[in-house]
Image (cartoon, rainbow, N blue to C red; front, side, top):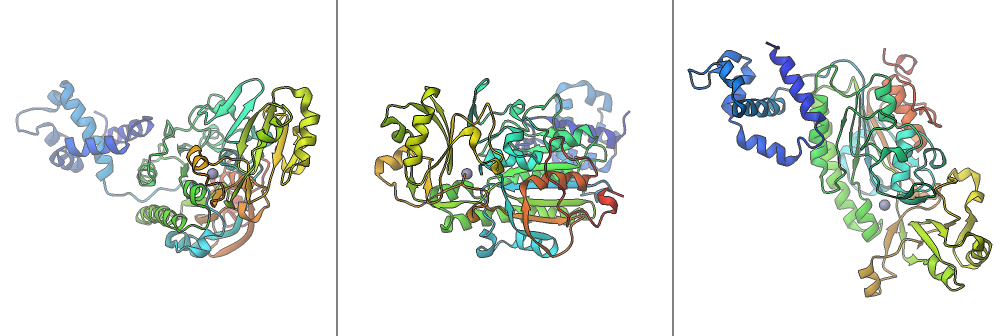
Length: 475
Ligand SMILES: [Zn+2]
C-alpha cells in the first residue's frame, strides 16, 4: 500500500490541479460532510483503525465501496487543511501580488499596517513606473514578461487585431507574444501557480502553470486567494510551486467610480491590507521567510478625471467613421476608411487637449506601436480629460463633471506611478528605492528563483534585490 504521506500528497496535488477545486463551496461541502472522527483517525496515521470505523469493516471494504471511497477522498482533502503546518523546506519561493490601480502615494496617507511592515522589514520603492499604455492588461503582461507592449502585444484591455479581430478580456494566452514568467519557470523546472493573472488561463506555446485558477471571476474575494496560496505552500517538496502570482482587486474599481481621493479608496485598501496581514501571518507561522520572497506591487496608479472627450463626435462632424478602443488617457482609432486618415489627423490635432498620431508615428520612447493592434490613429490626453465615457446612467443624469478616476496617461505622469514592496529572502531590510520599472520585475523574480528571465524580457534585475544571495542564485 502506498504510504499515507504519499497518498495524502497525491490528493493534495489532485485537489490543487483541479481548475475548480477548493473554492468556498467545495470547502464548505467538505467541512459539512466529513466527520471529524474520520479526520482524526487519518491524522493518527493508523490506517487499520481507520479501516474499521465501526468495528467490523476492513480497509478492503472501504476501498470497495464508491460511497466510502468518496468519503475517503473528501476526508483526505479536508485533512490537508487540518494538518499542522510544516516549516517550508529549502527551495526558493517567490510570491507576487498585484493590487490593481493602487497609486504609489496611497500608502503615505492611509494606515496600512501590513504594507508598513513590509516597508520596515523589507524594501519599498517610491514608485513603480508602468509602461505605455498605462492600463491593467498591458501592465500585468509587462510585469509577467518583462517586455514593453510593442513586444508582448497586449496593447490595452481592449483592442482590435487586423488579423485576429477583437481582443476583449480574452482568456486565450496565445494573444501574448512574449513568454510569461510562469512559462519561463515551468520550462526551467520550477513549478508555478497562478490565481488570476492576464494570460495565465491557458497554456502558452504548450506550457502552462502547474496550478492555475480559471475561469477568471472578479467575485472571488482575496480571502480565498490567501487560503489557496497558503495551501500551495503546504504542498510537499516537488509539488510545492516556486513561483506564485495572484491578481488582487486593489482599489481600481472604487478609484474609477469615486476618484483617487475618495475615502472609499482608503476603506478598500484597508480591506486588502487585512488580507495581506493574514498572508504575512501564514508565512510567519510556517517560518517561511528564509526561503520566501513576497512582492506586493501594482499595475498603475490613478488620476482624477472630470472631463470626457468624445473623439467619435469630433470625427463625425466631418463624416468620418471609426471604431474606438478607449483606455482612459489613450485610445486607438480604426477608421472605416483608412484613406481619410490625413483628414482625421488634421481634425484631431486642431481639437483641444488631444495629441493625435498616425499610429506608426507614436513617439518611439513609448514603445507602444504594434503594427496589427494599434489601429490607424493613436490619441492621447492628460488629466483631467479622459477618452473613457461615463456610464449610460451617469450620462443620462448629466453627471459629466463628477470626479472619477482614470489611467492610461503618460507612464511618467506622477499619478500613474504604482506601489512596490518586497519582503523576505534576498531583500535587504528597510531599504528605500527611488523608482523601479515594471519591466524589471520579471527578471528580478527570475533572479530570486535562480532561473533565466522570460525569453523576451527587456528589463534587468533590480540591483538591490537578490544581491545578498551568492551570485544572485540560490546557493
Ligand atoms: Zn482601471
